[in-house]
Length: 70
View (cartoon, one colour):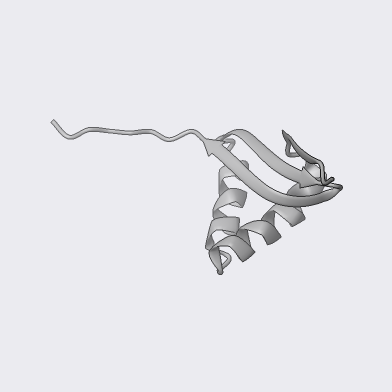
């Protein structure tokens, strides 16, 4: 039986996270966005899904400022 674990992303996961996002979206834009969010310290939490030692998923939550027109 396969074992799925959800855990915090670490620095060693970054290339695999980029590959997962490029594959999921079919382009590098989202992977590039993640890099920019990291460099601007806007990442709140980044989680990876690991199945039997192989990364199979990623989710990232970032800060976002919302302004409403008056």
